[in-house]
Structure formats: C-alpha cells, structure tokens
Image (cartoon, rainbow, N blue to C red):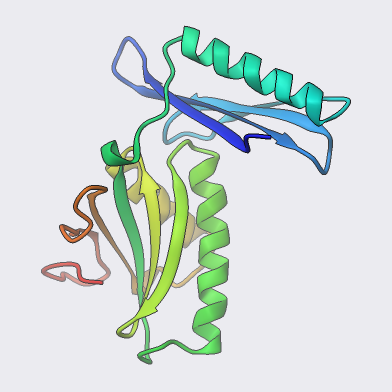
Length: 186
C-alpha cells in the first residue's frame, strides 16, 4: 500500500488547491481530503472491504488527480518552515520534551488538514527546540503555525518562526518573533 497521495494544482485564479487520499486500516476506510491550501479541508470517507479494494481506489484517485492537472510538488520547490522555541537549558528538560511532543502533534494535524505540509523532524540544539516543517506556501504556513500554537496554548511568547527554500536550509529568514529579533538561527 502506497501510504498517502498528496497533490496540488493552481486554479484559474492562481490559488493553490490540494487533494490527498489514504487508506485508514483501523476503520477500513478510504479517506479523501481536499480544499484550498491554508483553509480547513473537506473530508470524504468510503468504507472498503479490504486493502486490495483500497489500493484500487488509490489508483483511481491518482489517475483522476493527474487527469485534473494535480501533481506532487517536488521537495526542491517547497520551503523549510521552522517553529522554534527558546529554552532555559542547552539540551532541554523533560518539560521541554513534553512541549516538543505536544507542539509536533498539534502542528502535524493543523498543517495536514489545511494542505500546508508535513512535520519532518524536531531537534534540541543550543537552548532551542526546532520543529522542521516542509511546506508549499511559506506565508500561509507561518500564519497557520502561529494560529495553531496560540490555539493549543503552547507558550506563544517563546515561539519564533524562520523559513528557507528547501534547497538552501541555511538561508533561514525570520518570519515571526516574540521580540524584535534581527535574524533567525538554529
């Protein structure tokens, strides 16, 4: 089974749309999620008999998306958006590890249901927690991250956000900071 299919297309007004589908084995459902990037998506579930039936639906979904002009966005055409927390200790405490899990879980869901990308990894380095998200639209992702962190009550006052092209992750530019910081470093 191929996991998830996630594809994008610009509509006639240039607005980025997305479609994705996957087989939810737990509920034996084929799930389609679609909408405008940056907005809460619409979801349709179809009960399926087995993984073989789901695979046929995945193949049909992929064919229909291709016919409609949807395609995957290569990583090279996306952006790293890094949600960063300033920490009190160099390696982070058990409380910071709890924050890491809560923030990652919240961002995974919030970004996915809006077609805004995936949480790829997180790390503790030099008194900072960095959560790396791979996103097709920087500005919408930055706004969504701010809304998500504030909505989950995950210490918005310590959140900074930086962004860089996928192909040049060292070119991080500050997109949000609780203070008027000059730049963004990992």
